Image (cartoon, rainbow, N blue to C red; front, side, top):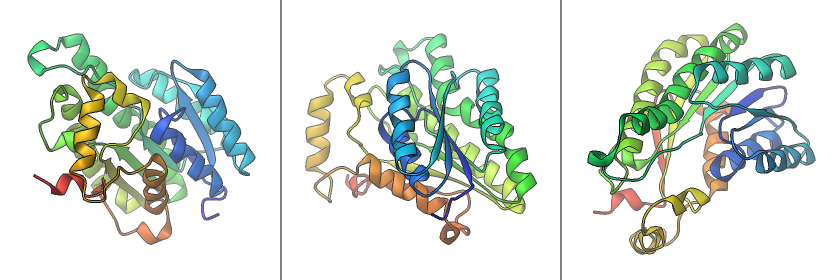
Length: 251
């Protein structure tokens, strides 16, 4: 229970990877703010699972693409638990289509939710971490930040922005005892995949070329997040850590 008395915010934590990370943090003793925007029921279920595991949780509705609502998410967490020690930017969205077919409003939507939320979330949470001399910031990115993938252009741009923000925040915040890193999962079987054209064929082809012979699970990604929050990871600063069963190694 190495996170007892620590407080974590996980954006987009009602389902999928975010839910797994929130539950893993709660099991290690953390107080957790479970964030959602559209669907409250899964967020409530995640919070209930955290409470059942011995942690404490609140559910906060916030559109993280809007700076004021990210700041309110932090404020409600502080009001409930007295501060913020861990900020995980997991919420993600995007419109899967070629770049030449994207519009400005889709650019704003994607970049605001995926990257701007990290920028404003860290700015709001950092003063509480600095005051305590300890903190952890994690951004969730993807291989689309480094490789061109079909119908993924805008999301890839936003994920690259996450990795860059993490590096700069890492340099600024390390002197205060705060580490900042990014996690880059490969393909993880969540509901989000169903938004991509021909997603079933994409999954079948990807699994065939993954050296591990399977995809990583949300729980495995959550275990990596736990490690980055542990004392053993105190020297890992500004890195993007890939967890994908070896998929990205293959041509």
